[in-house]
Length: 180
Image (cartoon, rainbow, N blue to C red; front, side):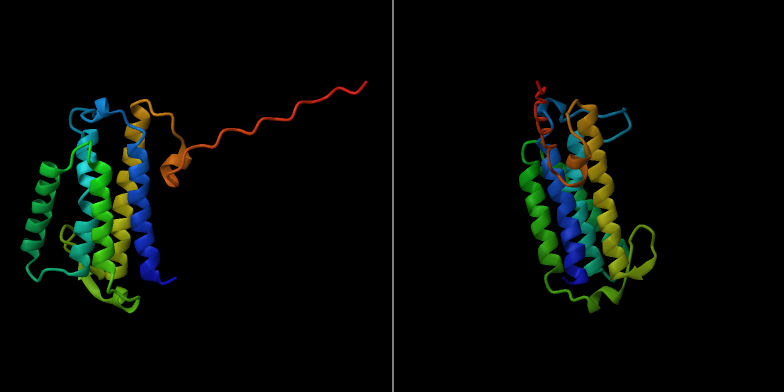
């Protein structure tokens, strides 16, 4: 497996786990938020439906105009707010995953050593480190989605959070037969 494929698999895995966690929510919790100044569940979902593809695209194909990069980010955020709903989250995550696949399709491992820049830190970095940052974003916000689900009453555990799988029922213990 190439390093690029490993990064891509990590990005896609985080989004797949988000789709799994989505199934643990009741639609009545779409507007729930832990506190007044925090994102609601659907606002968090809207963020997850653009941040991975947007930042991956930026890092792979950076604009020479750094202000334009920030404007592009804001436009994607606005698009997501207007188009992503609680009901279509899983479908929109599929679009996000496909966008990431398309963006990374023609990259080689050698491309990962070239320089790109981060529009918010304004620092130059390698493409590898930049894409690793996107994995970190998705991991952090996937974790937040897990915590929201827990706070909304979902019966889930670390397997749901890290692997996107439900807990397996405990195997029944064999009955102990008393000897006569």
